[in-house]
Image (tube, rainbow, N blue to C red; front, top):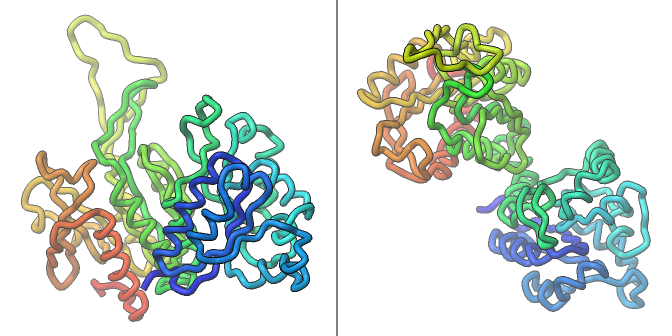
Length: 408
């Protein structure tokens, strides 16, 4: 059953071209069993119609603060109190400012001010408006008051400019909504730590040692754990992926930075080390770009990077109850992973084939062999999202069964 089944959402649609995305959001929430009731501001009505919102939500659309019928029943109070979550999408610069100031000059702002329910905003505006210190200060104030935020994204805008300010896509907002309601899910109250992506180890200011990891699998695992209710911290190396909704994402570049971020995130209940961490780094990175010196290449002296998986597995009294590693192999997949399990001291290893032609690095699918103290279990090839969901369910089952570790 979807985490949105039976959930009641009040959607505030404010002014902006991104209002058309609210129609897709309503459809997606409804597909997952959620109920949506809409407030349409005067500005929002310049871009979408009450009829469109009503047809998709299958509910009345509200817009007038001084409606004789609605306000005879104190409509602004009832609308906010009957919802379990208020979503403002798009959230214009204007409505963010009004929320910060506690204004109540229309139905939307009055309902927001009269509510004690959690609020999620999806900002959408011109890049200059987004970058304006006033907007940034308003959003920080709202976050300090407990308002959640998703987006905005970077891209082309209707005004012809490019930058941050595009409203998050409907699928991203849906992820954030599902993550919110996942608080009552199997991993509610748990803290999950996930690493993802490659690490880049500097040789000089323009060159680095890296690998082909896209981060897709690690990001999918972080989102799956958040959907199951875990407070999830994602430590990500350099990737082109968007931060998963409902997940605290910490961006790092090097293995040393990743280890420091992981240690700072402890304690946690489960750690999933899905990042493809560089095994080595330059012993002495150059401060200036290395120049060609005839035909003789410069000597590159390497030193070992910290072993993040082994460090977390040996973290003493702050060791996660369950430590899960990944083994990216090109041959003898299961055998090498079993040796890694014993060497690292973790509880599970998820081994996968990353050889040329496997399509794992940068691809959409994965074939997993789960290795634990009892043996190996091979999963059929499936999408990385499905791998993440299957792993998340296994983690929840294990933690809720009270198992400290599978190797103990």
